[in-house]
Image 1 (tube, rainbow, N blue to C red):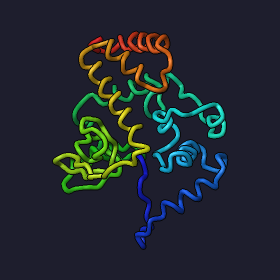
Image 2 (cartoon, rainbow, N blue to C red; image 1 turned 45 degrees about the vertical axis):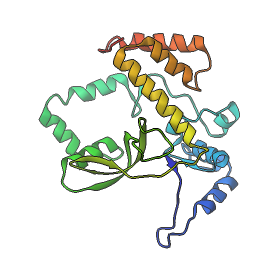
Image 3 (cartoon, rainbow, N blue to C red; image 1 turned 120 degrees about the vertical axis):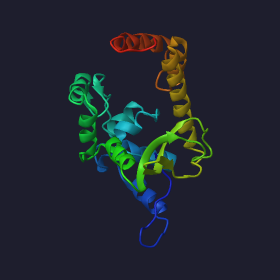
Image 4 (cartoon, one colour; image 1 turned 90 degrees about the vertical axis):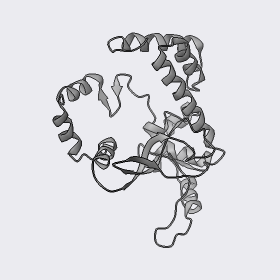
Length: 234
């Protein structure tokens, strides 16, 4: 997500320029750990990308050794899955919830940080609730991105599903980052749905983090070899 507007809650005053002035005057080491790269990026791009370094670093590829050291950026451990857990940790969690009732109980329990569970609760209760970040098809919510990509943006959620807030255009200097990532993700989805190694490789070659066809081909073979333990179309 990109922060495109910051206002004083009491007065409605636009305080984005004041926030950016503070950011530009602050040295990397003075920002909280885990949030240094997003603010260093904001100095260059003029807008704050959210939510934190370990996520933003997945999508902004202009990191060099100097900024990595200044922002304490380190490669994410290959064996760690979403949520900072090892793959077998997730398998143990899933094994506990083998019935519809067990899953309902799990969803109903409050957990800090698990936004997917909070969204599930909203879908299961009456009324409409605002949620700051939901992944949905764009469908015009951000006019300068194509309709067919997945975007993360505020939404209103109720029993009839989530409805995206019409966000408006992203700044022209940051929209291409989102469009490229969304387009690559669509090609990855097509590759997974059809079992096409050719499409999977083409998606890898579009990713600015991948700068070698040899590395891309080897990486794809490693990923497919690991995934053979699961049911896939490859």
